[in-house]
Structure formats: structure tokens, C-alpha cells
Image (cartoon, rainbow, N blue to C red; front, side, top):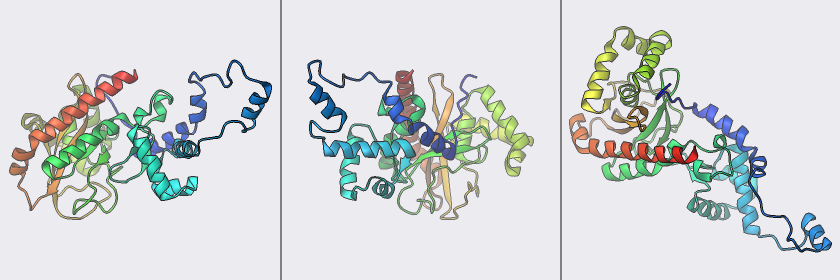
Length: 320
């Protein structure tokens, strides 16, 4: 169905990554390789190569390969997990990881600090073995957005159960850094700024599917918004003003009662202009008024969303 893109929940996504990435060596065998031996080589040279003798091995390359293989098996890993799995020191691992990051062979998650093989790892892996491309292309834009406006943001995608799921966040430091990571938090599609921005701008048939599900199977508070048709007015207002606003006193599970916050969000759209995700800005309610935040930051937020949508379209196009 046009525009109906549903992303996997984080735990399922990670399980799939573990299962699929464990086949990395099999997938590598599908790539055309150079000859194992020179055309003119003696029998002794071939035997030396087969038995591990012959030319000296490059130890630093072996170490890097061990890191890649561990990430291929596990899907994601922290520095401590990499140290335990490879036996390498932190300093050695950090040098290897920095080098691999420079060449887009490894990606570091912004808030958690964990490492994974990115979507742009290349065609040596099948599509299902790589990280979600949306999070990869969004990360630099989220970082730049925070530099511009001084407040953190999340990017979230729709799930088929009337929820959104946060895939990446810049809530790393300060009072808005959650006690538990924001990864995997699933905000309401009708009460969160992220959900409202998406719902108001997704394809009409997709919107109907989401609302029908929420009205029948959603949480009690969410069902009320749909059955009373209150959400229709919110959708229209969101579309008219160009951004979604978080419902007052709404907290996504798991609840983290830190400082009272507010949020605005805008859609990330595909080439047809239909929302496939949304990004927000979060701030402490008592520090900045909603009207001031909108007037000062909405242009930067909207531009970040457009850049993410454009970059996502390019990377998906190149992968087809």
C-alpha cells in the first residue's frame, strides 16, 4: 500500500540482526573473490597458504576482522562487550573502531554508545544484515540540529499497533537525558508530538488503518481520542500549523518523571510527500514557552526533517 511503511520494533530488529549477521561469512562467499593462488605458483607455496604458513599475516587487520565478525554475530555491542569478545584492550579497540567508522564500516549509536555494522557497510552484506538506513542518515542531522537550537531531539517511526518507536536520539547529557535510554520507547500516536506529526501527514489510507486499530485495540486513553473523534481536530490543526505538539501531562512508557517537558515534531516525508517518520524537539516546559520555541526553532527542525527525507530517499534508491 502506498506510503505504508512499518518498521520493526527494536527488540525484534536486534534479534533479526543477530540471526542474519551471523551469516556474514556465508554472504561474503557470494562476492566475487580474487584467485586464492597466483597463476604461477609452486605446490609448496599453495600448501603453505592452505596451512596458514607462507606470507606473514597482518595482525592489525586480523584484529579489525575479529571486531567485524563479533558485530556480525551480535548485531550490536558495547565497548565492554567487544573487549570481552575479542580480548583486545580498550585503547586498541577504540583505534580500530575509529578507523572503521572513518570508512563507514562501523556506526556508533548516539546515546547508547554501542556499535553496529551500518546500512552503508556495502553490498558484501544482504539488505537484511545491515542497520536501519533511516537512523544512519538521520544521525548527523540530529546532531547538527541540536547544535543549532540547543535542545535534543528524537526520530521515531510508526509501528502497526498505533504507536511510534524512537530509533535514535540526541538526549545524551543534561536534565533531558532519560534515566533509561530513549531507544525503544513507544510514544502514543495520538498524544505525542511525534505521533501527531506522523499521523497528520501520512497517506490517507494509512491514517485510516492506524486510527481504526487504535479505536479498537489501542490503550484506553488513546481509544477515547478516536471514538470521540477528538483526534480529527488535532490532525487538522497539526496539518494546518505544520507541526505536532505533545499533549500536556502525557508521558510515554516507561514513565520517567523528570522535569516537565514539552515537544514539537514535524514529519519526515518520502518522495510522494507522505510521512514515513517524524522528528521532534524536546525542552523543559518552564524554561521556554511553546510559542517562543516554535518561532525560534521550527524552521531548523523542518529543514532537518527535509534533509533526512532526502538522504533517506537517496540511500534507498541506491540500494534497489
